[in-house]
Length: 321
Image (cartoon, rainbow, N blue to C red; front, side):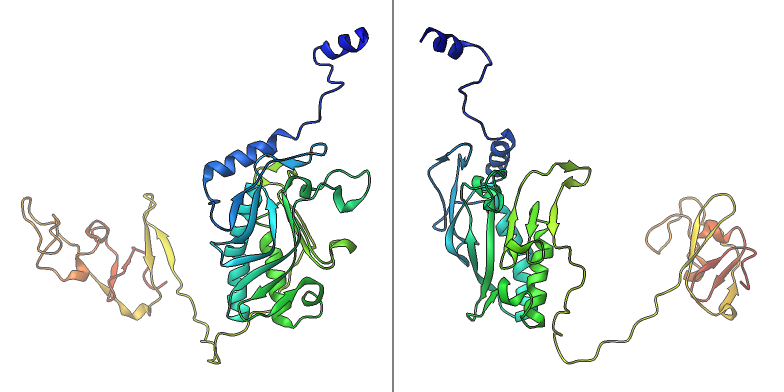
């Protein structure tokens, strides 16, 4: 007993200390709460803290039955932390719903989930590190349901669905890679053939934000359906603008494309006497009796050169280019 008491009082020995969750998890929770983007309502409710076994659990879990004030149901209420709830709703609003409207002309009304919180290792492999599911920092999604009742599943729609189902699921996957730090879908490995796994694991930071892991990497998307049967408009040839420097002062004069035969010579414009106010815009130094096209850029006109009939100034030596 004496030995046990001595060991227990040794500072920093930690022989009997319980493992602690990484500090970044609590910091992420507090930052999310401070943003106040996740609001408590009938569909998002705080739950009892989950403590263990081991370091599994959440200090401030949320029970999420639906998103966007109940307009997007979750098939089975998910236990998530605040950051995951926030990211899930943003992904649905920014990516999934626009894709559904574009491809099916109706919104998603339900997420079919295959699991959220669960104290288990990655891929349920013994000895592996804990999954983000063990911290309420992940959710598995097996499919979506549309307003008319249509069900789009990963197990069928990803490979056997029609063009729009395939396009919708791939748009959802690609967009998820901008909202979560881990995204795994069909083709990433054998275990994800029938669902998306999305989480907010800490993979480290880069100069451009958090490091992300997204598999499979998708490049080509089936095209969205046409909005109507009207023919596409012809391509327009863009205007060609050229810039010329004026001597050593670097002033640039834009010239629109016009026939060179349209150039007309303009006499230098004399500034108005001091104290005189021009009738055009109330500016000083304009010759109110001269045509408007000759009153543009008097400082440039005084150098000589040409004013075309459309009012564009052409510097000396540029005539006939």
